[in-house]
Image (spheres, rainbow, N blue to C red):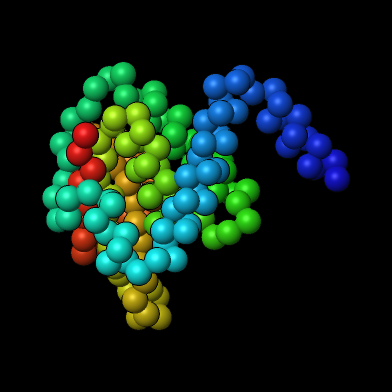
Length: 150
């Protein structure tokens, strides 16, 4: 109980803008989880131009926004009642960036784990900045990518 009170106190100490960003990320994580449950052929067209990428350059003004969205997605993904792993986080972050008129590229990759079993991973990049999934992306071979242009 005390742990929950500490988390609530921490949340209440944030400024209004941070609280709104955390709430928005929670909503988009839920939306992305719903999309993940649909057939991928229906979801793919909403992710952008298939097998293309956005530029690796960005506006310096976007850097702070990207960092704040990255942090909000990371924090709130731990508090969802549903699974919010790599693909859910990447789609949620993409939609948050789209709302702010910021381009991004979502990558889908595959690899084999230690036992030889196929595994998948998703990550999101905007300009030179990786918003989600960069921790392990180098282990994966890109099999698809989607450029969300504005």
